Image 1 (tube, rainbow, N blue to C red):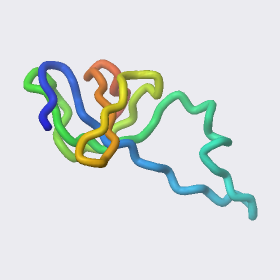
Image 2 (image 1 turned 90 degrees about the horizontal axis):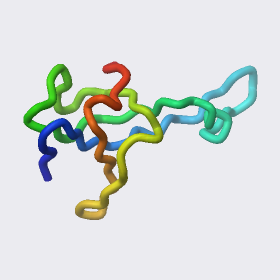
Image 3 (image 1 turned 120 degrees about the vertical axis):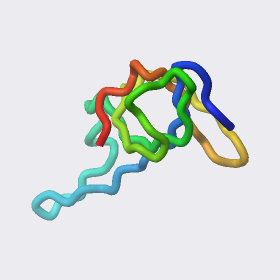
Length: 85
């Protein structure tokens, strides 16, 4: 599976619940966060500045999901990436 043009194939990274003062904060608490974390699986031939295996943050409303070989990935455009970690 290979991305083309300005697209990236990414694998979302599930954030571990955080402990704050004895409370466990789950994903539901963080629903207001607009950006999600993911690992880059494949980059298109026109993508610049992002490499395979980079960890990125992207707009959670971007792209669409795809299932390939029993794994779930997202396909987004390069412009939906807001930062590289």
